Length: 401
Ligand code: APR
Ligand code: PHB
Image 1 (cartoon, helix red, strand yellow):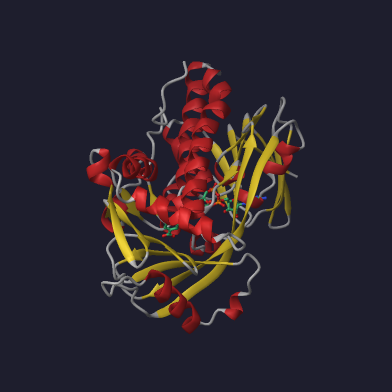
Image 2: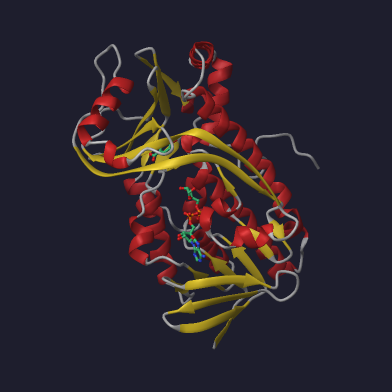
């Protein structure tokens, strides 16, 4: 068996694991990152693409801002569409200049991998049979690399292995609790090789269900449609997708998405999930391993970044000052933000989707809510400050201390 030793063993090379590795490296703390997929798979996976202001600021601070600055699309607002009209929510005006940046998660992961490979710090792709143990005293991560059996001895394990990893189940074998909610609908997402016909995102509620207009670059449009959770993607021809998108998004002034070649499409279910606490001894969960949000508020990636920022800071205090108080507060402080973001994502989701067996009453109440959110400055500000992201430290909430 090959025996390895590091300070922090990181499971998962998604945004959470890679960013944690980056932040620890900048603090002079060693880590090993293990990923069970290939590098091509990780880089090619199409995920969300909206970065909050705080996420962008942090990426600049850790030296990852260059391509983001050049290729990211800065947006100062979004549109809400209903009853064949679009209404703009001007984030910058409502929040004192805050904005969001559209930059695909796979672009961010590409940048993070390149930064990691520029250091001596190990990142192993394509590992198998990852198993974490010894959280109480001597953490260990066992795995196979090619056909070799390996084991890492470390001070801490960071479980950054997403919604289907091994760290969450290992945590749940202890006293941790899961709080969960399934939604009775899913999103059919697609990438189209056509220029976006609007400069900002459009979230729309239509009689036939939700639709979202987004983008990745000046030549690539990203779109989503509400569908049923168990639909077969083969039942959705490109023509049917475009007809449905046009119907749900088109406005009375003649605006509609540009049609083009569909480059990729897939269906994803929607749920909310929180694990409490996010720590068991020397195992810390971060990102999707600890919580899942429905994608309507574009919060998954940003929440992962907020966890990692806290974890990196707590580990730095431990190694540089021998202080454990930030590690002790990690779970409680993260969970405060997690629940605040769960609330927002649930609210956006409930306002913008049609519940399959929902009544006309529900639909009319949703339209009334959209009417309020697009006409009351107070309501618009509430949406804008949550969408652009509450501050990383204070969560925008009164401090409890
Ligand atoms: N061993 C090693 N790696 C694993 C294992 C395992 N047993 N199981 C899963 N992984 C890897 C996955 O292949 C993936 O690359 O862990 C990584 C987890 O990354 P993400 O799923 O992207 O999760 P996270 O880094 O927390 O980022 C949150 O993901 O919610 C989505 O798009 C959402 O933007 C959000 C982001
Ligand atoms: C995306 O561009 O992929 C995207 C945008 C906004 C969301 C979710 C996904 O709420």
